[in-house]
Image 1 (tube, rainbow, N blue to C red):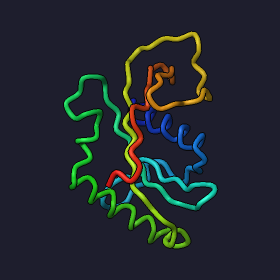
Image 2 (image 1 turned 90 degrees about the horizontal axis):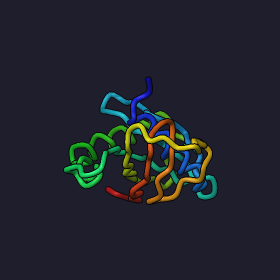
Image 3 (image 1 turned 60 degrees about the vertical axis):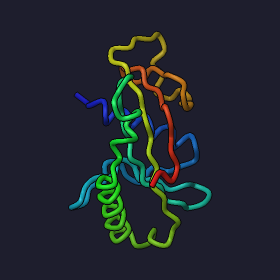
Image 4 (image 1 turned 180 degrees about the horizontal axis):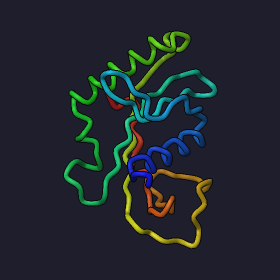
Length: 142
């Protein structure tokens, strides 16, 4: 069974693809941690390291943004540096750190469960048995 976190990461990856990004890696690991999504823009060669936070409604941490603490940011930066050390051909590209906030409801049923449906920020969509909504996509979050 796939976790809601992994499903939300796939959801955000699909949204990034619609925005002109090529997914390089999902759940890329280093000794310091993991980066949920690493993508490269098709036109600019910009690299983005994306942290995906998935929450139900009425959560304590404003959709997950407060969970991206300075300590978490430092681990993501260390992991990104390790990644760029492994993929030296990408090291000179402009890089940024983004955060995607996803809301989910369990057991949402819809007659339309099209995983290729267009994902829009703030609009709920049926995805792999859940109702998901990309609440916010914060570019250059840290």
